[in-house]
Length: 123
Image (cartoon, rainbow, N blue to C red; front, side, top):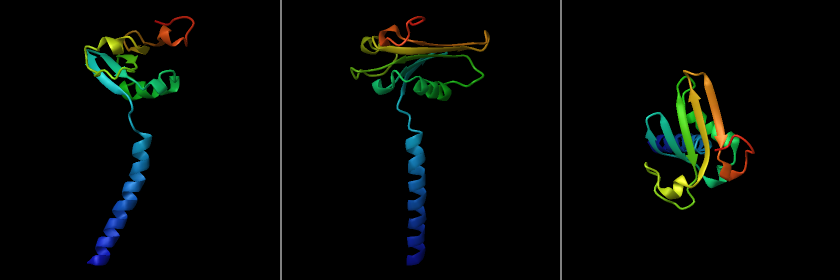
């Protein structure tokens, strides 16, 4: 009985260790503050605010390829509660926006002008 218990605990420990690596790779560090219809308001970490590849991952996780999707991204340096309607402190920190219209067969990603990343076509 004691050997069986040790073997079971060992197997559980190995399994948990293997899953721990997967969980950290898939950790979601962004927050959906709320939704209004098709539009989602997402708060991202300040460290990722200028990382286009980061936004691509969030978009992929937030929107199905075959559906219309509108995302608005913000940071939250003030630590305000991420709820809709968004507090002014969060609204003052837009970072990007993404729009996909299946009906019009169009996608658009734009940086916020406040980040200084896009010389043209920012908002």
